[in-house]
Length: 307
Image (tube, rainbow, N blue to C red; front, side, top):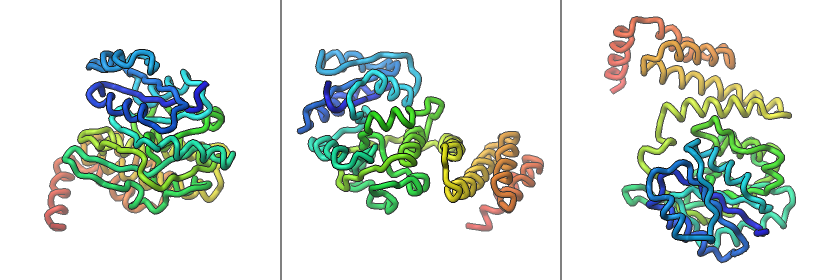
């Protein structure tokens, strides 16, 4: 049995999948298996995978989304450690060799992650993703991970017993599914940061993380799920309820601007349930009862006064 199972979900990423795979073959740490989960691709993914023959295991399924594809790969694996790599990212050769030993150094570590280099579509390069995220670090970091999502899937290696304890990715989440799992891990386990870039992450235009609608909806769902973590300490409950009040207010305002009035009112009322003194939520709830034309004129006037 290999020490590490590398799980690579792919949906119509045949054009960049070879670079991801070659970066795994180039690892100086060789005790691994590669599992590609083809999540219902309609491009050349099947042909790309076929070129590698028995060097990789390929699982094909109907399109069910990224968290479901990762879960399928986890279930198909048997190694004591599971590493994640998105099909449009790539690893530097020393990645696993730097990360895997950290697990034997401390049995309380459930996840090891690293810094990464970000490459944008326009060629811009950010040498250090974590440089602007001071909350990133090692140890028991639950109170920090729920404030800042600093662990990126392609940088993470997770202990199997950790996954077995806290559960898999939530397949109902179309965004924030990674930090939702990390929050469960960080509540029960230590994490370890390798503070140098070991991953090259491609940031594509039009990705799910760029959608304000999805960000606000699943950011809200993320904190609702955090509130349900068994044994959540009172100070963390208080913090999460405060954040939920803000998330609901922001989501309500977004829905108000989009004309989705029923959802707007429902979400703003939820904000007041988390914090009844949320003045901004009260104001927006009142505005939602104005005629649509009057509200749009008021918004235009407010914007012109600011400018």
